[in-house]
Image (cartoon, rainbow, N blue to C red):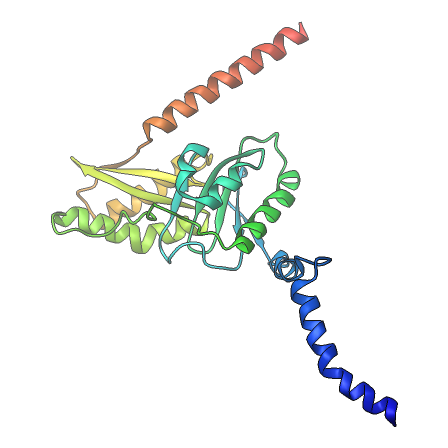
Length: 255
């Protein structure tokens, strides 16, 4: 009986000591963080193929950007405003990063890089980032080019409305986006982003899809033209030079 009483009296002290061990023990200083980390490591990330074999959509199951907004990072230099894009560019073989409302589209350098090699590191990078609590964007705003302004004429307003309601949602489903750059003398100037940038069927998408729809609803539209940034043009030219040198080197070794 005395032993039982003694044990009962000891319970408050044991509980008190247990709390101090859990929070202050030098043996397990990061128990709480490891538990939180383990929970985030079980984040279920789905993948979805796109029409571009070099691009894949990663769906982390959480919001990335606000609905309808996108953000494109064609190279590592453009990722200065996004901690998430920065760490994704550190994965060897990643060429570009693109954010949608609930997905991340990654494009690999070329066909020689296998997705089965890249995916494990990409999964770990995304899970670690969301576990860190860092913001996805810092000092930049997502793209919202189809917003109608007071100085837009009727044709531009109709183009923006069609892009926003009929065209962009479909393109975003494929892991990319189409931005409205301008309209001049019947020509609609658009910029492709994400998986659409280097997609083999991007020209077909522009001509047979976007152009036909715009011309059907807006007779004033004569054609659609793809616009590229100066940085992208330079990057593409440098990449082609690099590929040419590699090809010439292979030919010399074979001879």
